[in-house]
Length: 127
Image 1: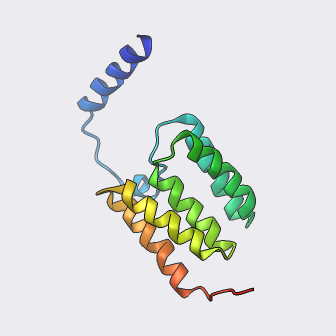
Image 2 (image 1 turned 90 degrees about the vertical axis):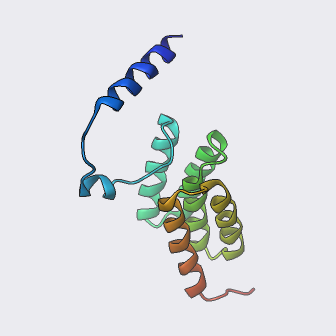
């Protein structure tokens, strides 16, 4: 009940806001979630990816996906990590699923296309 009251108050306050979107907001990472654990896990995954530790990034992303299995941003980041590990088929599968859950989310679609373009440029690794 308390959560509902707090959420309602926040929504009312947000509705009163006339703040314009500035350029800095557009550069802020989008996680497609308000869940604090998902946001934290996505940030940890970004840091691991920045350090080229893709398996560690996948570990964080797997946890985020358990919390929000239909979050297209989690799926795209997982696809990116698998792509970096040379697992293009897994990445493509995740991107297909991300596209389904993204719906009309233009930013998610842009991220999907970016990862897809990286996959098409990657050489195919055969054992």
